[in-house]
Image: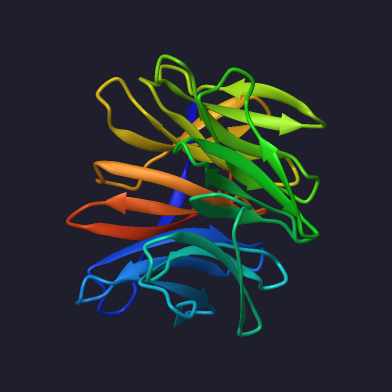
Length: 268
């Protein structure tokens, strides 16, 4: 287990009271959400240093959560009936979708072929993971779990996420070629939540330590590394791209987004 070396940049939407950085593609585009001075949450895209905000029609709360290399943005919003729904934003046009019969549909990620992963809540309030591919939904449930969330998908179709066991412990998982494997950060108290996987297999996410504090992590070739914004008392890593850059959030005099770029390895 290592503590990886990164250079961190804070991300704050102008005039916002809180900012999250949730999605990142290989081109460096970042999506997230922010809370304005009226305490309303909106989505944003950060492209080449410029912010653009967005809200699906009828939204009273918007989260931008993912962006692929084609520039398609995915997220979720709460409508005027207080129902959580999901959307895609492609070249200015919104497409809204819901898992059939669900009480809430929460997109988490999408890849370059348009496959979408996320979670939905059934009529009993239980969360299940899902994949949406060419208009067809497939449910994802970790065997024996009481709740499952599919958090990230790469262009090979591998999926990471988290599940709750019967004891209330949240574990991570990898679903690859139809087989599940569990991911637990060493020494985590009761939470390991992978949220992203690259085509090379690098995984990012967050975990809680023995004091219940949250830290980001990477998992590369079986080796865990920590990701902590300097001086912050909370760090969550959400998305990693093929260059190893990571976006997430940290708490230090408020909530902020961040971009972490891996430092070059110093040769002896």
